[in-house]
Length: 433
Image (cartoon, rainbow, N blue to C red):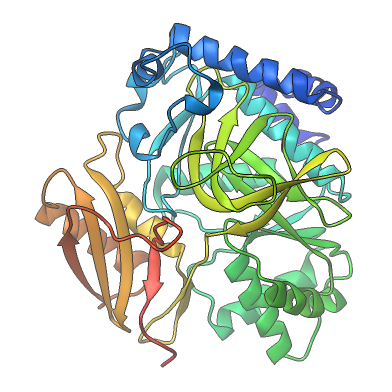
């Protein structure tokens, strides 16, 4: 593989990764006063150059904690209406959230901010001996099954030095095939959804083996996107045979926090500013659990200021480092289908993304497995879901799950929330067959 292919591809696409790495190294030495200055700089930028954000802030002279809390629903409008002066959908990085909290939307980042995001990942991973340019990754994520999106993800896998393990079907036969791949390839680390990797570890247990014994090059497992419970970590470490590191991030802001070699969930303070607030939006005392707000200190194309990510957590200070504690949210059920196929709940992102679009016709959605062959889609939308769109979802279910499943649809005026105010995109009401 060519040297630093991943970094070189970023450069070719206009993302200044080398200068971003150099800046990030400097930011690691910055103080809280430096971060406060960056906060006010990004705020003034968007008040001056972003009409969307300027319209949200009625009083331009309020204290930071009196600024509006930006919600996912605020961002459910066409992207071009949310971009700062000088930025268009053609000269930025554009991405789409998974909608795991039930609020999908399209976001934008200027190229410098996107490069800084990757600089943060480079630094965090390097602490664990992982080089994004050369360490072979076993990637447990989903992937579009056809079309341009599939080829784009496969290209990303190639330049990122990773091999993908699709998570749409995780029955015993598929998991045995995964084990064969670990026997053949010298993977350095595993990265992916917690629930999928947990199923792999449980499969190793059922086969009475340790994954590292059949793949001696394996040194680490990084889990993301879902909750990591202590008992699950213990099981994974025992049957994968490597340390399990917890990563917390979001596509719209990048790396939020990641465990360091000492086990501290260190916040990415060089790029982001995190706040914890109560139900009324007031700051909580250090160590108290509340709603997580994130500010991207460098994204000039699109405002991410006091943005509610959708999770609950607490922040404490350890050795002059802000550490995330008591992280809640992002659990994912498993769907067991009539054929015996087993799929993680996040598979429904790839089904429901057929109804995500920039016009934001669908504001929220959740999926509930009512029976082994019956899934109920509840949604909040500006209008009834057209028959053609329902058929499109059913076709996606045939493709990503299995043929013959039933789908029902309910349009709601609002969604019921859990006690922590977070929607769970997928829930199963049935047990094993």
